[in-house]
Image (tube, rainbow, N blue to C red):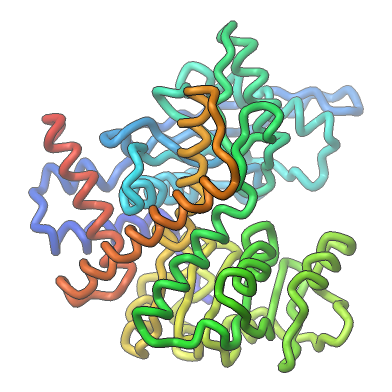
Length: 415
């Protein structure tokens, strides 16, 4: 496939929505760039006694509707444009689900798979020392992303509290329950996606118990495999992939057994009863519902015409290029865009912030109920925009998000 710059893609999406909203030029110019970018380097002492210098970023794209919110990535191919794009998409994501937050993102250029637990802790604490003055419960609230996790957040929270000399668990979200985390967070991204699939099936008259495929079998993909069965009353999972390979079984996999195999072996490859296929064949499988849950630009101009799913639920960030969006729309494939489909994670992160602020925590049923209500309402609002503007679903979602952010910017007198 061709190489795509994620931030170029994100900016084009804004321009499309802005044109349909008839936004003035000053507002457009304001919305297509991050409000604040922090680039820094920091040292980490490695286990062998050497000191290694790491490059890192924190980007706050827009804070008109509230403090910035977004994950921190540890990745060997991290770039400033990737982080800009992700911070941008977080801005629209929080707006689409109508929670009072803006969009942000951070990252460290590193290879976390080659680092020990002690080195990862030193890296996490070093990152927070570099951004402590820019984050906070009323400024910017980070969370985990690629190759970071709840333990990473605890190290970062502890370092922040050490620097600030105060207890502020809400400064980072997706923490373990023992230190201010919330019930219902571990499966929130996938659960929110499955809620939108349920609503799409109802709206389009598609059988939710048909065949489905999952590209990417990390946390979101694994949870989607299980929740699709639980929340939609069944379904047959026939194709799955992860970074090491892809597998297929026309009779279907047992999702629980497949998740267990992945956790035990580190990959879906070699699962009993499976045959090996290519990564593209997972995306192009003859299914009712496809969950892209890997990295950016997986569905592009060169493979979009071969996508057979009736519904594509984007649990990954930016898995579909603009050219592919148009092709899927022309082929009557209903895409639930990432800024809606994967918004369950940030929604429950917001719930965690609220609970941390009051030191009063909800049970899991309450979290699930509130998440379902928030995502159902967001899906219906995007569908209204789709019908009003007669555009493809991603552009409809962008119209909802961009309109809300633009309105906040205007009310504040920024533009």
